[in-house]
Amino acid sequence: MRNEVARLRNKCVITCYLCPRPFGERVRERGYLAASLLSRLAAFTLAEVLITLGIIGVVAAMTMPTLINNINKKHWITGYKKAFSELSQIHQLLNSETGGSYMAECNDFDDVCLKNLFAEKMKVVEYCKETVPNKCQESSTYLNGKTRGINQSTDVNDTWPTIVTASGYSVKFRFHGNDCSEFIEGYSQKLPTCGWMQIDVNGLKRPNVVGKDIYFLNIFKNKLFPRYSNELNGQFVSELYETLKEDCENGEGVGCSTIYLYK
Figure 1: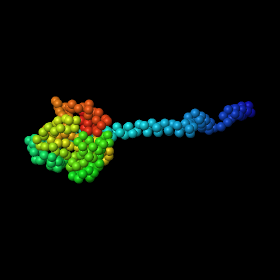
Figure 2: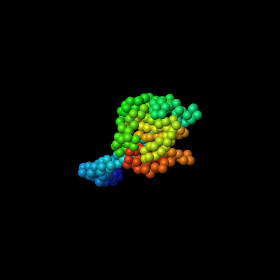
Figure 3: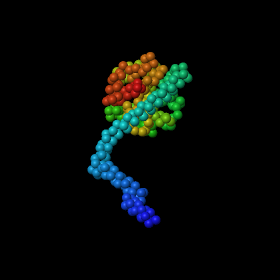
Figure 4: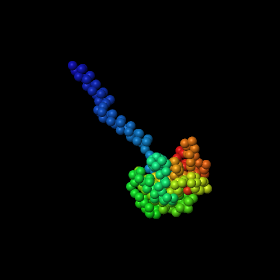
């Protein structure tokens, strides 16, 4: 019996020597050591953190303006195409109702008459006949910053009567004549235009710049076309395409009206 007790006591001594603390406590200690080691390996100095944040800031400053401009450009072009589609449908509807002669109701250069014909078919929230700026449009400029363009118009056609639609875009109207005879426009181009429209895709909102949120349309007897363009086999065409492309990038921006509808 004494031998058994002695043997058991020896085992306890050995066990206590090998494992002086509870198992759970030893596991926690090892975890703390591992975490401490990892934190020392992964830590950055304050200088390194500041340098990294500085690099991120510089990259953001370089890329964000371009990103925002691209987003805005897509938004403006989408709005332009939507307005062009709606106005084209109204033009076709008016022709259908009058046998193709709806503009005969207006005297030559009666801009208000043309505006009223279109407004009757649209949801209009504002009418303006005062010189810009007014409730329909703020002051505007051409893409290159000028306020005088091909047609020598101050503040980009500031006297044309205007409406603002429920969709948010505004339209200015200019009526040439109901015979739609050839009219010499910019770039010495002769086109059988009945008149013109100027669209601002977001109304009073900025930037109010031709080629960004402002675009121009030609009114022909049968269809509407972007400025300085016509139709061939059902497709938009323009002999001035390369000239208009250059204007859209570096000029007054009027050419964008054609370029963006080709896309």
